[in-house]
Image (cartoon, rainbow, N blue to C red; front, side, top):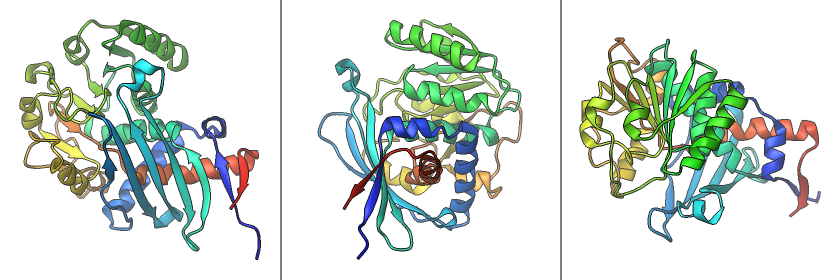
Length: 324
């Protein structure tokens, strides 16, 4: 019998593969069309919780169009920031869809950041105003950057208003965005300053089951679009109930997560992003609409991106082949 091997890709290997954000956005958008057509398989994520507001999730999915099957084992620990450790970490186990054999194990940190930003950009493509120029960012971490990076590829962005509870983090973020994305950045002193008069708002803090929500209804102006990457941690229920369109990347998963104590004040009507992308549900219809896509993060996002990374890594000779 032939010796079996798997390709191990470290975080450095995944980053060196250099998959472009534009390609990630295209792959994620195509995945949503497949999902809307019923041509994917993805059970709701399950998890364990060893600390308050921390999680370790198992996220399996299968995307037949690309033959991508596997599981992401991912954790999020808010207190890691004070330890000098990443909030999000994990691995993707990627399988051969024909044989079920494991083909690769790859670090999930970079992929999680990029595909989360890409999902925001896909939602914004259909729900934000096409002329959106100003982005408000609440929490200046990895997701705060990847979301702006993705949005900058689809919108004529000119300015970012950045807020973080840690001023030094906001300052470092501003330098990175100016240097790498070429955008003007204003570090602001409050969540209100980040939200008011922003065309797009991204809240990217830790996921909190019992948050002290601060964003008021009148801060979120007509024509604005929001992507709460951190669920409803920043947003008061009044805002959620009064948006014109409320969307998520998977309605079934949102309702499952609601049974765990989240999303207590979301509106009754929730659109599925896949249906919006596929034209089954309406996107933005009027300039003055206030819209929101509260994406939960899907294993299908990861399965859309994993083959891009794997193929590029093989082309470049990256990673280590490990015997099984």
